[in-house]
Image (tube, rainbow, N blue to C red; front, side, top):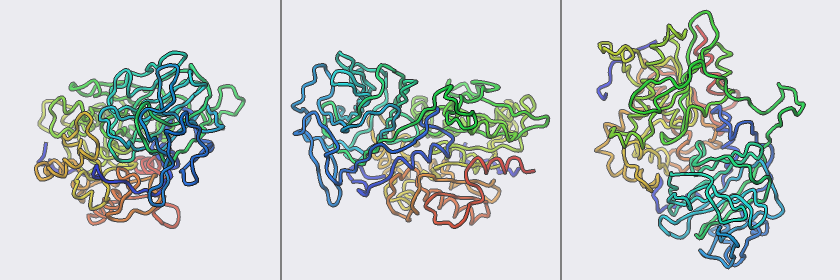
Length: 551
């Protein structure tokens, strides 16, 4: 394994509008879950689309509680469905939302609901929108209140059960409302009561809960007392196979729980209780390769338990041991005064890797065959490890610090390869990701606002940008990497706008160009590439198994 020397270092404008062309969200979201080895909810699989509405033909599919509070709007060639007043004529018996519009003639149980929404009236911390589900009647239903500022009456998953609404969650995360369009997704599994809600970040839920008070019911959109514009609604049924259904085990779609770790919650650091990992030891009489799983979530959320049965068992069956790590989030790093905040999650990953190598003899690991994988922020971290100089301190009194941080290979999903705002706006015209990494996050501040601050302060933080952008670290000695962007269904144009700029394949295209210049092997796949024929590797798992098991 090659080793590099020690390194010298230890958006979209908020007022702009997104592209109004219709986008297919569900297919890309499902693809990301499949490639990342995750599932929307354990055991669920999308089966068919039950309902779609882009409002181009009107709003006849909807049943509002007050038709005078809703408008069918037109902007250019696009049509939307919008709430035109904060308080409607509808007066619920119990304290609950005033603006509700339900899909006509549709009752669902296991379901995924997706749509785009924008707030059309600036009410500050009172901006909100609602998603309704399990709706039995006006006095019995669930709804998600996506309020800007969380408190017991705002920003929670709620229930109305013959009484004023009450929260089922204790969410403390703000919803970053502004005047732009945002994406919302809700997933519900009736048999277990699991409910997950996503806002913009389709990888990590904003909030989740389990409740089985209501079964199947109607669904809808609306607001408690605010004004919103809705578009591109899609409702998909999710099949959850029943235990004992008679289906052969090899045909059952429900995945069992992930394998029991050989070692759970192993502590690798002292700065945070998130500095832990789980380890699965592959059965072998000789030392085994190791795959490091680094979860995504924008360095703001997520957990090592997001990795389920499929990827872990596949690696173990191939004779590869597995470790899934947690790490400090940006918010924790800022509280601790870490500069820049992104240093915390990235250096935590390096320390976890060193700790695993220090256990090589005890856990039967081959320290010369270690790969890393992850999605989104976890993918960026994996590439940073792959390209960074070796951080081993051979003279340290700490035996863990003396271990190498270099990788044999890395394979990642939807990776950010640069955190340089100037570079990103040249690559992707509506880039907005990265400001939080360098300390520009604040309570209630949007991702777009963070990015604008990063642009304004770029020169001051440029050394940090170069230290923590994977593309800046590539050198001829680096290991092979594999990049996949399953959400990229069309070929991106340099400087063009993307439906999901944070996970655009343009990141991969530019990194591949840099790697090719230096002779570093870099494979890139995405659905809209236009490449003819089958790629050498269909996904990250294939790549890692091949590179870690070939001698």
